Amino acid sequence: MSDQSRRFPSDFVWGAATASYQHEGASNEDGRGESVWDRFCATPGKVRNGDSGAIACDFYHRYRDDIALMRELGIDAFRFSVAWPRILPNGRGAVNDKGLDFYDRLVDELLGSGIEPFVTLFHWDTPQVLEDAGGWPARATVDAYDEYVEAVAGRLGDRIKHWITHNEPWVVAWIGYGWGHHAPGRTSDADALATAHHLLLSHGRAVEILRALSPGSEVGITLNLDHPYAASDAPEDVAAARWVDGMHNRWFLDPLFRGEYPSDMLEAFQPTMPAIEDGDMRTIGAPIDFLGVNNYTSPLVGADANGGRSRFFHREDVDRTDMGWEVVPEGLHDMLVRVQRDYDPPAIYVTENGAAFADVRGHDGAVLDPERQAYLAEYIDAAGRAIDQGVALRGYFAWSLMDNFEWAWGYWKRFGIVYVDYATLERVPKGSFYWYRDFIESSRAQADEAAA
Image (tube, rainbow, N blue to C red; front, side, top):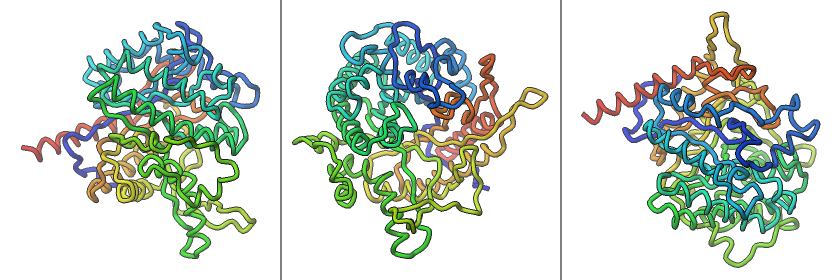
């Protein structure tokens, strides 16, 4: 078990995270337009059980009660995303003031409760009208995103101190456009690579917009990063792990921090690369204030005897979550140390970390989840050890505040530290909620004691 007495800095940010389509609901209210996830969910066979985010956790109507839960939890910050179709129902053009009004009220309620908003501008809910016009593989979508960022920053920029331009562009590119498991469900390597480039380009442009419209705020991007371990010291296994690192990590880290795509991956992808215009890489490489990191597991990788570049091996000696993901807290530590060493971001936040388990309510109505408590304890300890080694880690956000719509898995997989009874929408804090509350309180007490 981890060392729960580890001391974190007094200004360390403790938070919890959510995303608009996964928890807001109200998909047809107050002028919100259709998103690619609305369409994907309505397509038979795409989402388990035919589930959708139409109601989700109904956060749109219950946010005040949920913020009261956040106060009880004792978090410093709440990470949420803005739904693009609420702001620009047609993707661009006319702004829907009622959509902005909701986030206005949400931000004010959070600030009034002493909770700092960390705002993600894009967490996968592209307006469907833009997808119909070409989607992220089309460069015009970058221009549409500019308009969206301007609308949100123009309304909220006086109060938001932390902006995240995109969440997990790798997932949008490959899971959504390359392999079709997520919205919009395309299966094209060329579309995936064009999407990745345009997401990065739109990030760089957003940095410039946010600097102008939200002066004094900090701007970053969130990547899903892992630490691929080679299955052995054999050169072919090391090369396989290097390939996975290129796919998952370096394809995004190198442009952001070095202004170029990694040469080995560029050579491999060259036949299907999109057009890169003059100035694109300079825009993508605009200095950022922090890097957001999402991490849940880290793979064990070896050479593929069947002619592929790599294959994943299953570890025999680790626990697994309800997603089948291996619990590898050392992977978070090693990845953070590596990112700091190789890319030297000015600050890092763990913007998502957590685990799904098959939670059930007991006869007394309580939800006990010792496996999740152990997971959080071990990963938070790994993050603390990274700080000890000089990593500029400034905060940690548990995923997620509450059970919600888990994309193509529907409502089957529960990641929350708050249980949601989907029939009644009742919220029930789990054992992990109280563990995290007590851990945060203890961490603050230790920091205060050290300062005194």
